[in-house]
Image (cartoon, rainbow, N blue to C red; front, side):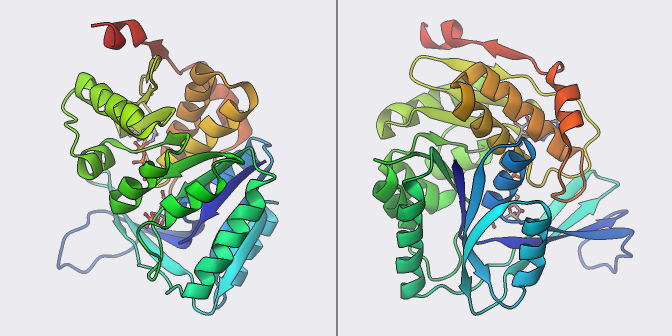
Length: 316
Ligand SMILES: Nc1ncnc2c1ncn2[C@@H]1O[C@H](COP(=O)(O)OP(=O)(O)OP(=O)(O)O)[C@@H](O)[C@H]1O
Ligand SMILES: O=P(O)(O)OC[C@@]1(O)O[C@H](CO)[C@@H](O)[C@@H]1O
């Protein structure tokens, strides 16, 4: 089973406008709401691919019905700890003219000491039946910056751990040596101060992380430029696929879901990167964080090109 942990879930409200200008009144062309939060998005994709997954974490009690109804409708197994507050609403503004998405993410509910003890216990319990545990996203107020590090250290002996976070959460989290991390290039630059001007810079920076923190895989996503998968002795480059972009929100989560689902079945990094690329690419063709379907996944497979560039970067 693959367990995803979302400590700060969200309802994603996507608003589409012709053009977004600071200080101006905007007429909304269309809007939609999706259930979000990085770990929940990852679980949605694994579930779509027919993988065995459970989503755990915290959920606000006040608007829990919306989220639980969706999870139920999609038949996603979930086991959240309820907080007596509301789950945040994150607003994503799509600007049609400039083809950009601007995100306004709330900080989320406030967590107390006893909630932290509860989540530690739940994570430890789930680790026993999980092949992989994926920790994704920001933390709500009240969580210590080292919480991912602590949780990873608690379960590492029982399961393979994946971390998708940024800033101090990632900087601390890597110290517990997760199996895989998935920074995008901005997170790589801002969190570790790595230069990201060329593929060579990115590979070098990712290799430093692999050796310094004893991490097996660093999956660097580069948005419209594709991605790079780096380990001590293998480097794979996924070429981007040209698509009509509707919203980039959740592309990284979909990529991670596709990658880990595939890797958990075959342990073939080339195939996993291919499947991850398919899911990440399809995600950007959808408005908001709505899901694609299995037919689209199959149709996209033949378009992905993965190059093994290990010789080029490891032996010079
Ligand atoms: N504009 C795009 N065109 C084609 N593919 C894209 C585009 N944006 C993203 N992708 C695909 O999705 C993958 C993940 O995207 P990205 O690097 O934006 O993740 P991210 O920054 O973690 O996203 P998020 O935080 O919004 O979930 C990319 O590696 C690429 O395969
Ligand atoms: O505020 P965080 O936790 O960093 O990110 C939350 C979020 O932007 O991430 C998902 C897309 O990756 C969205 O569903 C959600 O709104």
